[in-house]
Figure 1 (cartoon, rainbow, N blue to C red):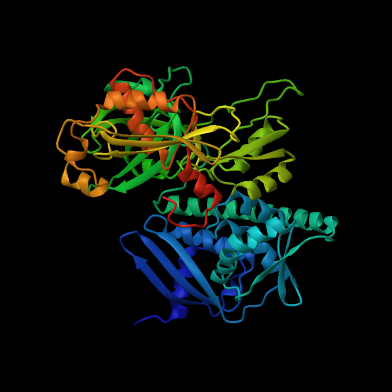
Figure 2: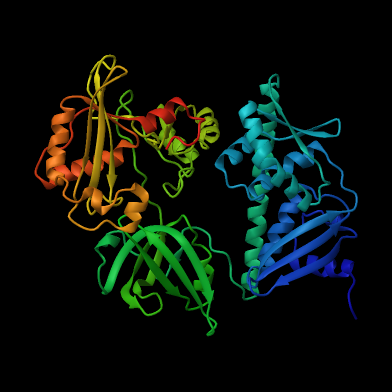
Length: 551
């Protein structure tokens, strides 16, 4: 006989084995509306319908028992719909930290801000007080939407959090509320730990796996006196090594044999290596759950070439979770360093830590200030401001910028020379192509001017010594007959040098013409043009930027 939604929930409640002091009257009439099973990812999603929003302590116990009951077979998440949701300051405040931590917000700034404040209910509006406009805009744009949605997931009615700048709030009331909430949170945490202990004891009696407490030890204890090898020193297969490192990746695979394979990626910041460990029994599998990304471990095992990864892999015999002594700033007070060049996670592909992490470290080391100089971005400034205020560390705001010279020079071979009254040689060349290396000048023309007067002229054809292509003739209107028997390139270039003397040289798109001239001079071991040069193309574009056709 099929069970209805209410009966299904009652069966589930029996399986969860809630502690005896749990007020189960809040579940009266509750229903298990839907269970969605994702077979491939082993994720189960429950949808519950309850009479009202659960008291937070009951909610915490319920979700903890739900996860414990199914952890051996699936990863569990859930949503709650309530028949008569009613908001209160107590409910909003009790759920606040939990909602923020589980709303998918990874920014440390959001976590810090939301840990210091809680919203309150005023005239049916939920109000959140921000320290200033910068923080207010940051919360409105990035944080409050996911937080509001997460409240709805836990059975709250849909509501909007209205953010206001706190200019007159009583700090005493805020501190009192924090103290009360901290005490309340501590009590709930103790009860949650006690409930977890009871659940483990029951699971052990039923032959299940208990969740490990304390430092994780898989295999045997590794003595402190054993020599630890740096990962960078591992270059070939080794029968037995001891290493230690920081776990930055963890994966557990289910094998066809029923055993499990744990794959860890660790680094000691000299190099990194993959660590593999096969479970031997349920005890090992339970210990696997005790290791997480971010832990430091010491590993004893053999290094072998792995056929699947095609790289050296450390096959672990023993894995011990350890604590690593952090680096200290031993400089005396008043002589602490200040970091003036610092990239955070806001620098793309350039850093992994947030500015909050760095500020906390600076505070711990007794440093009074720290600079943020992200690469080509200032998105870290709001978080830096909040972290500095929180930890009483001065923030020095900076940026590592990329400067691009996007202008084209107007002049070359610069000299301090009076332009008014100077002598100018304005010249142009016709060539057989665009390459100063492989093509040749076939005509060189110039005029010498002083003020507005033309005082001399220069015009010479150059015999290149080969037939001009049809394309060259079409573009320049110069034929073979016009250049045949003319002076050589060397002769014309030497005559032109005598012509321009020490005058200022001018040309339109002059880099093209000067390129051919200097290439020719180099061919005959003659010095390149050293006179001051002005390009009228870039000059015209600078003076008349809106005009077209200046090229």
